Amino acid sequence: MKHWIKRTLFGFAGAAMVAGSIAGCAGQRHGWSGGDSADFRAKMVERVGSKLELDASQKQKLTVLAEKLQAQREALRGAGGSGDPRSQFKALFAGNKLDQAGASRLIDEKTAAVRTGSPEVIAAAADFFDNLNAAQQQKVRDFMERGGRRWSRHG
Image 1 (tube, rainbow, N blue to C red):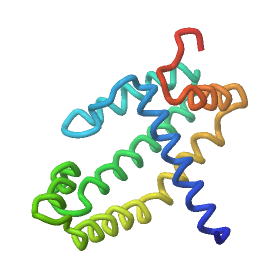
Image 2 (cartoon, rainbow, N blue to C red):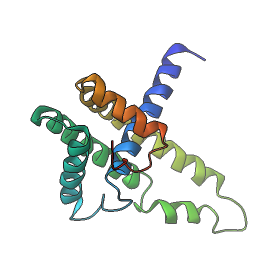
Image 3 (cartoon, one colour):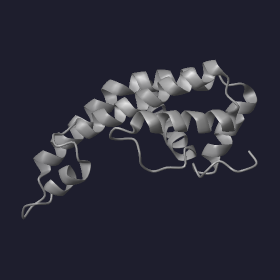
């Protein structure tokens, strides 16, 4: 595998882990859409900020990351038409045969959305993580090691 492909895949995996970690530590599986997304982001930043003992600059970097993740999520939902991934996927199975052309189109659209937005997400994730001190970075690693389960009450 070419070096740049490996780097891209690792970048996507890293961004996904950070995104999952941030969403998971907020303790909610919903709230990223609709009118309350700004509210949700603010609460998530506050919760993560508290757990990691972030200073104002670090909280700002986390806010930027959360905004980039939300924009990426919206771009993915919007890619492929209706904006409802479940209905898009179900439509592929609506006929007697799987809509292979539709599946390929859907994958291409979602991949293009990821490819377009990922550099900003990765840069925001790097800016946030790279500006944490060693103890804060270790807390993030520990959280990811637990598989993204909630922050412990003691850590």
